[in-house]
Length: 136
View 1 (cartoon, rainbow, N blue to C red):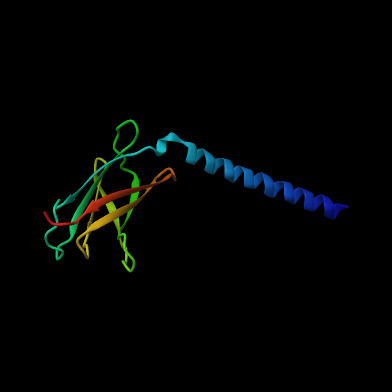
View 2: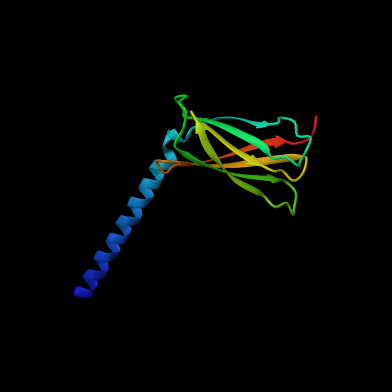
């Protein structure tokens, strides 16, 4: 009898813990603070030489148009054809919501940036940004 009660009590505790974790995660994913404004540029804007790295600058703002200065920004650059090894980097906060990183691209053509933005409150925001390195 005691063994059955112990198993029932443990089962209830596990179920409650599961729902607590689920509710915390659901609140974060429903929270409209995941809205983010990203303005970005690459320098130079027209790539003519793959021997030099490209500077990528991202300006991150929240829904109130305020700079986001407390995030970690991870980047993966990839082309859409088989056999391409993705380039990975982290953009570091410079000032006032501006994050910067350099990438040495390997080919001219159409690229996709996959951003993973991890805010200090635990939120993770993912964005995809297309760009082209075809010389002008």
